[in-house]
Amino acid sequence: MSRRTLALMLAAPLLPACEKWRARLSRSDGAEPAPVVVTVPRGPETVILPGGVQAPASFADLAERVAPSVVFVRTNQTHRYGSRRVLGRGLGSGFVIDPDGLILTNHHVVENAARIDVSIGKDRRLRAQIVGADPPTDVAILRIEARGLPALPLGDSNALRVGDWVLAIGNPFGLANTVSAGIISAKDRTTEDVPGLDPQGFYNFLQTDASINPGNSGGPLLDLAGNVVGVNTAINVQAHKIGYAIPVNMVRELLPRLVGKGHIERAAMGAVIASLKPVDVARIGVDNLKGALVRQVSPGGPGEQAGLVVDDVILEFNGRAIPGP
Amino acid sequence: MSLAGVGTLVKLLVRRATGQIIELSVRLGDASQLPPLPEPEPVP
Image (tube, rainbow over all chains, first blue to last red):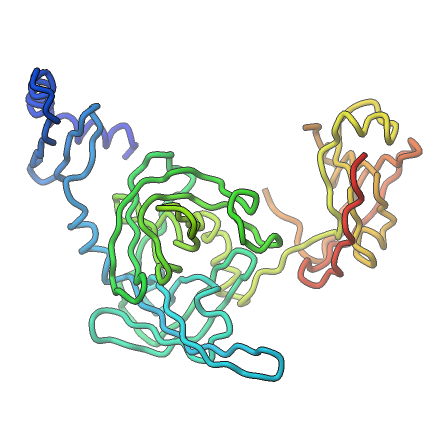
């Protein structure tokens, strides 16, 4: 069902309510018009806010449906400071992605963990093992010995639009199954936008104003159909309600390799390339901006071994022309 | 689009700063095993 179709289905039974809202808006006493709550038979309740914005009247049904799939991750961690070994404890979130016991979480939730425990439901606590982890994207897969678990479906983060409603569920500060709602505030946030991230990491975050706090890491960001669209991962601690989630489409690409091999192998030729700029035209004597300029070459790396040097311009890669900026 | 994996031989058509155009064959390595890159030269 397309987004447009869904919107129309919701809007159609609401027309009488819209008329009522318009009537309230035209009052001359200046009072803020109260939201109109409409109950749609066999459908979601929707609030029409001033400006005609539609919002769900409640996330309760959705929260109730997805909560059993969200887990509480507790870790005992070992940190080394020189010759000293310090034991610590960590809290985080995760969610079931396979009924046979696969849990998705953040790598930083389980990093250096000597022991990982996963709580699912109210009374079930199980030991977990790391199946695979990818530090550059901050994704980890755990396995618990359980069957028939309620797995969350993975959605399509590419289909998200800025302004779409999302729900975050997790265990901030150890407060189990905390639900918060917000919208997609922005997409494609990278290391340049998010201070403090590993510059060698691969990030393409969704930004949301759904409340995310320490302990939410690894928990799901969901669309209103209950599909996972992101993995809550980071926050801007100096800001209010600026949270970041790994888009689920990135995670989906990694999953088969993480589950199969336990890690992600990335191929590289050991060179940093950049687009040509007008200043390069005279400096290295090219007459156009097509191709990729080699800015750095890793000593002893594959590129250097093949003869690649700084200021080379790569015109084709495996027969495919590299366009200009 | 399929991505080239570790160990794949890729061919590059390269223009040297001298103007010479050459073909290089690069066998891709594992990014996690590569030596660190030197500090970038400042762009004039």
